[in-house]
Length: 341
Length: 292
Image (tube, rainbow over all chains, first blue to last red):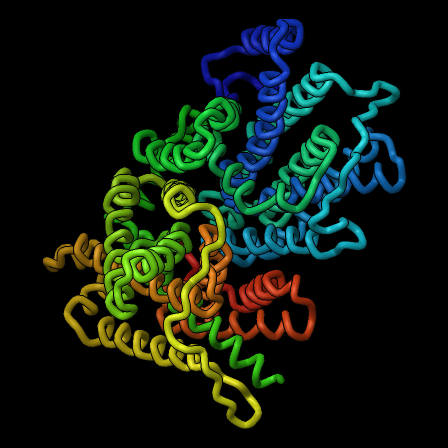
């Protein structure tokens, strides 16, 4: 644990943090016993999945500055890896979920090579193309993935003899995964590694001149981020018991990126909040079926106009940096000044 | 057979080129990627269909009305959604999310208004075939080539020779200096959105005629491909968008014909990624690849 002077909560001391942590754990333990409807439990579990996806992308995009629009690819790779391992080889969830994370992390490392050469729009587009390629391979490699027919009948998670079958079980499992993800990304962001990420995001050239091994840190960022996406992909596969390529499209990637931007780039608490809002609200509007996505699109635009810094804004440790960014990148007014620098 | 594939590829490629021009012009001036461009393309196709099939206007009149209407929709989108976001001076990521929001909005709006099912696009000109040296070219393909060539010539003329074109190039180079020179930058932006959206409408309508169907989701893949074309050619460079569009069109048609139809999009993207790894600014791009 570092001293509180470098944690992102600023004034909160370690003991406060501990109390808050215990409080959150108590609430999580209590939730399944409140007699909530299966619908609400499902909502919470789905939000948990998106919390992990959002957090992992936030580490990559918000902290390390590698804005990816292909995060669904790692989510999908994880889901397929775990589903195939358990369906074809009968491997237990404890093994398949780790394998899912590792395979996703390895494919995440592939993106390091374009990330070293490309910046901005070009890099973002490569991630988008990567996501489409992964989806199309899943769609066309019928021998392995059964293509558009998908993989039905994925068994429930089996953790060292504990078979997760109830809503409460799934809820506890996803709560544990998101808890681990939160602690890991938060600690990375507040560590020497996280400061290296921020340096790379701010100015890669200067970071390199300061002796930061850019390639190594980008590898860490991509591997960690895609590991968690793959891990939660495994959970998703065993939770819904049926996966097909339609679950891992560009829409999914843009939803994950929306979570990160709505919560505030680099702000992990914001990502958690945004996940609950973005997942729960469209579901609660089920009655308005036809207008649901229309309102969602509108809400994204309005949000960007009304609260561009995200719900919770940037965390303190990054606020100075963002301010300088604002001046540098500007809106339409200053855009070309930035380009011509 | 091979020549036939190339011709078909070039037909699709010209459509991507028309769409890519919109991406490229907006990026050149405002440095952001307008993800809603594909939806505007879809909207253009539906507007033409509405004017021609529902309102029973003669095709040329309906087509021109639709081009103007789509152009105006583009301008309105910029004024209502993008301009307020731009004015906040936040990172480009916000604009990107904004354009994704607009894209989702337009797609679902089209679904509510025109219905979710695939609609037939009526036959506007008779689809005769000419066979030249064993290669068959339909009249529609000939028309697509002529219309596209004309539009590209007009676009080049506007950008290179007219006053507003000069203002556009100046704004792309340095917005602030251009503003200081007394150019109404906001008007330039509006013109760019109008031209870009109008071209997207032409592309959407021609594709609708070529495949004889339109649906609310047609803009998604086409938008991605057009964006790929713009990036491949070097985003912000108009000639690059044209060349990129033709290359993507030919590559994906050849891939579908000789490798595997299911992988046509994947191969198009793979080629793009490889080209970017060798030449990070795209084929005809210059300078550093700053952006988003």
